[in-house]
Length: 112
Image (cartoon, rainbow, N blue to C red; front, top):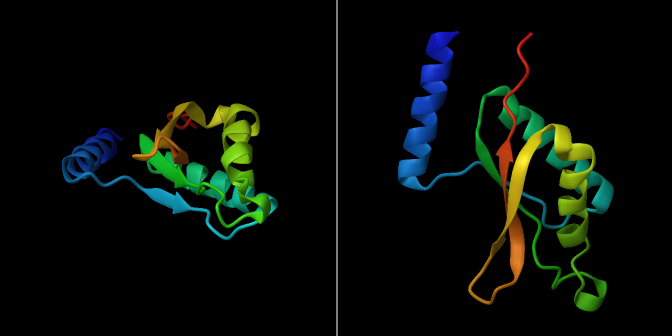
């Protein structure tokens, strides 16, 4: 097991040096599909000891009324049903100050 942790740590250092973060892009998905994909992505990342991931949900400019539904729903899911997978998350604003993504810190998987 120790070698797996070393490999995960080295992978994390390498990704951090290169600025690579595993990312899920939810553009074009409906709410239910987006939440299912979010849960699947977070569980997969957690299973390989990924410490941080990014979820892109967009700003909602293509949504009816220009209101980002996923922009509201994904953070709410992270606070509720997703809380068991997440240590914390932070909205990632762009140059305009609007967010279209979150950076998520994952809980370590439980030992079996």
